[in-house]
Image (cartoon, rainbow, N blue to C red; front, side, top):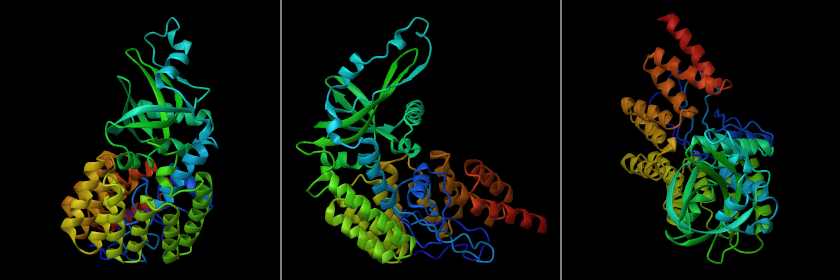
Length: 447
């Protein structure tokens, strides 16, 4: 592990790099993520993690004075735990038990045949109207992949959230759709939200301009005065002669492999909870036997080795994931974490910057740069990075926590309190933030 913080003896402990993999049972990093809440419910344990599903677990908490911050242990989370759990949600929650339910259609057919008549009613021409479809019309749609991507807009995300609530799906399902890809059906372009764990496989398996079959569902439609926005969600795709899930499978029956991977995930989580990091690595290796190109398992293995302090192995496994998909931004962050552990800071910075270029809307790349700068004593640059991380994602809790801790360590208490208050607005249960706030108040009175 990286245990050489600049403020090793300070009261205000910062969160370390986020490796996203489970660590010792006492490891507790606070989060308001719906995905994390779902995992806590699923596995009935005290599971906490950083807000964004991503890397592995290279963001441990700064080891400070046990007397002052006994709860600020090394905070860990696992890319595989999150990403493979998301993958299971794909097959079991959204695929509605069987890919066979997805019927050949075109997007134009759905729009033309199922346009809600309410949108054409008199008096609604200038009104903003949202309608949730009572039938999701699971469809196989042939389109052209352009390779372009963007973040799902706030209005679209709102419709997706409403759809999830309407059908009483688990709320974390809405969190699966953060980005959308651009496709063409004939001459018409469609921006379609795609499950986050599926997106990396497009660049890996489909050439720009290539034909692909999307397995998608219809969420609903939003009518604005100037336009009507039809919202579909992409759960999986077929490239060439592949069937759903073939991109993640090494052969055999997809459903049986999904079930086997599901069992392995639970076993892996149990190993991590018990502090059996080596055992967790072995389970991930078994997942790779079923799915040799599973970049999430590779990245998780990288993070687990990072927790063991075996940074060369962390670098090697992150590179394996990058070799399969160079656009897997989270693997680049894991790569940087390993390089930072080896004190190869210039190379680590370049790895983080690659991740930022791939996904500039993910705060973890900038945040990781901040952790590295702080470790080297470049406090001004670290503060700038932490501020930038919360500008990218105003709900990114670790960014606020580290920003507050650095301000507090620099005796800039007003700034620290402001960051902590914002953090506690986002997550009133963030106990480390409450503890830091109490400590700051004590220190201010002693001045």
